[in-house]
Image 1 (cartoon, rainbow, N blue to C red):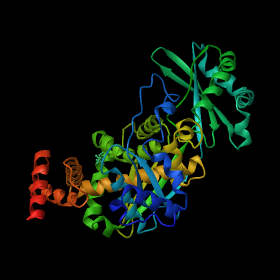
Image 2: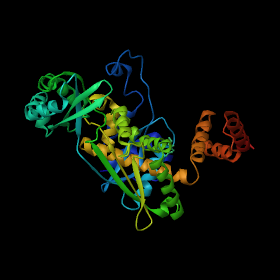
Image 3: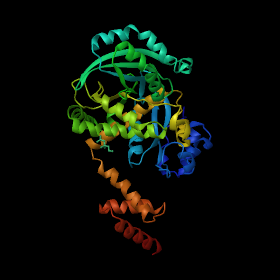
Length: 425
Ligand code: MEV
């Protein structure tokens, strides 16, 4: 646990000072953060991770501040190319902090694989034949990964569904597996392939697809927090945020953007920890379809008895701590050192807390001043740096650009030379 995740002037520090501050607050040695240095992941390492490799593609990694999750102060590593995301997550966490931060829970790391049987003559009876052999098939699956049981995981269930489709009625067997600290794709895919012949024999017909489902609805993580109305800007802001939420709940066009805001936070932590962003994104969006079949908001907003905003987020978060890029990429190792999570479920819960902070922060801005003001001041900062402003000159150039409301390279250059002329005079 970090001593505190509240480091007020964090954004104004140099990169080295930020690393030192993170090390000091978490108590980890600065060497464990060396995975973030630009040269920690050379092409030679990257070459073994993918195919036809010609180089590496780097992104900024930042640390979101202010998070309290289950009474634990935590600094959160986030990798993103988008400006404002890490600042917004930190801001959301600051507003949640006033009333205790985030409370999280999860179902546990349960993944499912599907085996599709085609050409089954009697699907309803096939379903029962397979269920009669449930234990034998589960035991066969378990044989593929004896280590998993040793660490407390293993095969948990076998579910059989009958799904009528365009070219026939398919019998679908779901193998339900507790994958512990793995993301679990390899474990369940291996098992699915191993049991498919037996399933085809028992059910009749032919086994075709044997693959995990990314609709990981048995691997949910949840976060809730109460956001202080005063910190949000008052009761009228809370009411407008509820209108904004209600729109996301009712209208898929808004829901997609609302959920994209959540994924800004979620995917940044998933990526920083070397996990599979597409798996989490697929799971999230499949989960966003409500019982009525409408694509809707992943989060919920309500006003509590004290007029504060009570917000929740529940979604599938299939992430691991072992295997894949998480193990191989030095930046992922440094990110996990900062996050200080002991299990994959704990990481999943932290990720949902970040998604919720991100969502509330975005909604507050949207319900008040709009996103462009903040974006423009960040854009102005980038322009100031691009025209060669020094650390002392950047704020002056930014102020000049904001005053003019013209965000162009030539204006940044002109303002900088005015500043320099003024300084000489
Ligand atoms: C931009 O990356 C994310 C937002 O559009 C999210 C939202 O509209 O809720 C600001």
